[in-house]
Amino acid sequence: MNQIPNELINNLHTTEMGIDRVCRNVGLDQDTDVIVWAQQLIENAPSDSITRRGKNWYIIYNDIILTVNAHSYTLITAHKVSK
Image (cartoon, rainbow, N blue to C red; front, top):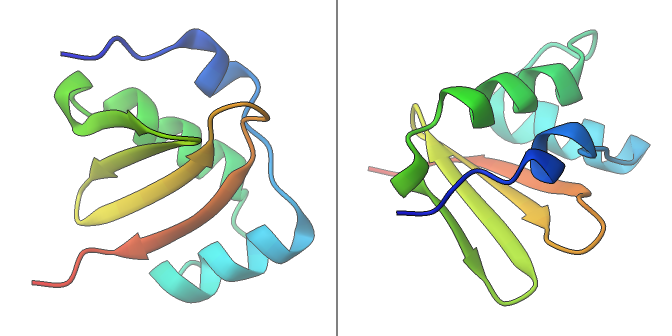
């Protein structure tokens, strides 16, 4: 199992384009604080659903996949899991 790195939650940030992309991909309201939403998702995700592959962290929870850069902790995108 992976341990959730505190840095992943505490240093998480994104760009304006990242906010737009996440909101569009998962259907969030543009007024949503995307970072707070993502931090809560990460905190609630089981540790075995958080994996690091190469330069990114992937967090899967509640049919959502977050992609976060492992070095800069930038939230890159989020997608709904297709079934």
